[in-house]
Length: 482
Image (cartoon, rainbow, N blue to C red; front, side, top):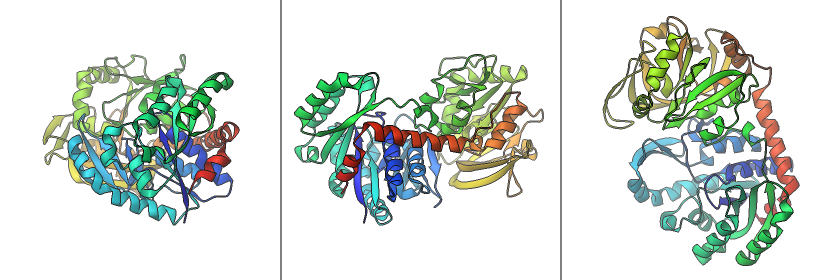
């Protein structure tokens, strides 16, 4: 039976996911069988698992760091927002319902059984289970029905270490405030803290570090400097894709849809030296000098079609195409490029039909059945292999399917316009296939390297583990697990 340790955060985006990944790689290098676990995640960036389900992309990265295949037990509850007030509920890899926030609050306590069931199965397969919390334990208004932080830690009797993000400021208040507002029995589960994302000389924070220890009675496990290679690893927030600009290189633009999903499709492009990957944010125009515009996946295709039109991007896309530009639609983006998207049963939202962008002669009908599968494909234009996955609802068909984007087991997949400049596909993760990525970019006269994307990600995970080993008491952290 494995020991377990839980990493919680003083807030969202404080670095929990990366620290769990780095600790997983460090533990693996010590010869431990280690598995990641997150009781509840909220993300539209999902991965398809070997057992035919879906989990948050961060847990898939942590599994890679641990040297194991992703499994649905690693993230038993996944919430995929479809609107501002509602989300699809995935339990142990399968969609079970779509609920509004207040409805989910009523459902959530009943999900603790599935969470503990998955956790126990992982414990029987490992020496160490590294658990990632969600949000912050300071959200005491959510504590009664909590399954993601202290509710889980108490039920499963897992010790906790809390991460504070000094880069956003107020880290002393973050950590001391948590000790102040949470239940004393919850506070007793917390055994220490880590300061993350420090820039500059860490000794300048010595007084603050000692103050946190004194006010909380928690042990400090170190100050972790900002990890500069974090951008080489898949992130759960699409905003990270648009941070580093490379003026002078070939420009590829992608639309920041309101319900953008599986945006890690674009990570390999971001790392290509010859590509300037530009995020087109709401209210911005699509750059006129873009060589390619990508319409990415979406958790709400018809909703994001309305959002896209509200930004004027439909007009920009048509102008881009008239100028000789190329367009690629992935999954929901592929559906948007067609003539229409119909949802007669109201699976993704209100029942109805929405006019598409008309750049591909295909039409989509949403269906109850969800496709969740890993596939090996051959790109029709370049004859290069693609290792990918599909995660979508809906069937797409029409005349442009006669010109497929790829072949999966000799069956046509996706569609290409008669002029060859508009392409659509349900294949996620396609640009991680190195030979295909290079050949695809060459067709656009975009220079590409021979870099192996998978090896680069793995190297960044090794560097992350080295970084954590150099600055944190890893032996002390692993000794806390029980």
